[in-house]
Image (cartoon, rainbow over all chains, first blue to last red):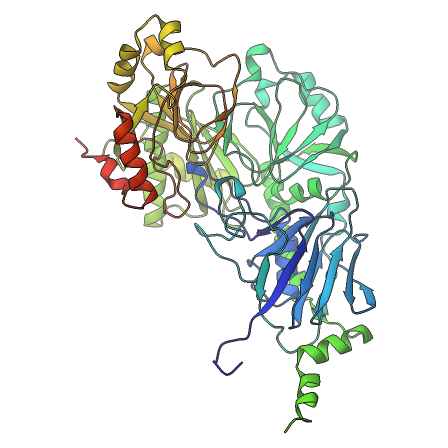
Length: 353
Length: 248
């Protein structure tokens, strides 16, 4: 507490926004009927874990980025940060001349005047970064960025150079970590799908191909969707290539006339006129943003009942992981932790009259 | 009791109720009516586990929380709500009178539409203006409303060359539909005019002017009134409610 009785504020400055870096929380629900998509974190399990690791409410806003050169710096106050990413993601923190790597799934107390750089891997893999006490303006029930309609984020936009994010100084305590419970799941080449709602617009052979052949993840992956390429999926007949517009949800697999599937994601339109052969189950959607372009994926049909069972199991696994977060003791923390708790400042102050 | 809809699976958190496969006012009426009944049952607590619903031309998507409910359970509850006919008692739709500046720079395709339909431009405007449209669906862009039906003499296929940029506010037609573009965007419809009123405003709740099931009539305004309205909107002297019409 400072003399005004308010918590002092700390800041994080965006030195380079990297690739598609946005503020995202759980999403903006309840407006799809007006054409407003959910937006929200593409890897919700990581969003929740990263928040838990820095002591936030799990629904809080995080920075979502891709492995593409995001660089941030702290100001004159320490901040607490946690990153969720693929285990081989490369991120460094630099304080003075000292560089230390940042690993996923644990928190770090970053000293003042520290720069954090996420390296560019040439892939479009997602990274989630949480800061303790990150403030974000809610608009229509969410801080999630949806730039197309100027909603959420930084005045309706993605992060850009010079943006200052207000965060809270770290609460006393040392950093903590856990195992990433999603590690194996997110490496899987299997996308579970529920067939429909327009699987009857495709030939029996197309359904067979869809479920038995591999599809490559293309380089066209963003928050709207992911294009895959593989054997063309033929429609039942020419008339079956279009439908009267029907609702789209994240996970809907549209197949336009060229027969190549597109999996729609959180920022996609809320309705569309291409038939949807199947829907990727919600917990498998993060895979599309975590594998490298060219990776072979295959679709596996599951029943709605078993999809929901899998969703419930994963929710429990995630809760267990959050419950297993424990303090970490390591030597590299000591300076930052001391600075964070103002102990060094206190010693300096003791020399003053 | 006859179901008017067929349940279709759409993943682990959405159930689609399909009412038909074409664009027709009676199908939209059934969708809107079912949607209203679901929302009434959500408010009364009779229906639980639903996150939101998405009405379209021919279906109603019901988004649910898979941690709370499953489609089979939902279908059972939804069937109990469905009397199989349009329920006139639940009507939350609004009637709007929307100013449009037809022709000129506001409506670059008015002349070509007149030519293609063999009508005078005055007759095109008259036909468009005397129609009571219904909002069949919102989508494509936040706040973009698909309105129907455009009068039959004005039915034209989409332009063979879509525009890269259709200005925000453009009132445009294609086949049986009329649309108003909330944002600058690419588009292939024939632009008849421009409406100065924002169709989507993220500072307002709800952000979209229209909702599915609303009735919309257009009123031709001249360039002077267009300017007055624009300056009222820019200086925040404009209220959406001024466009509402009494419901009959």
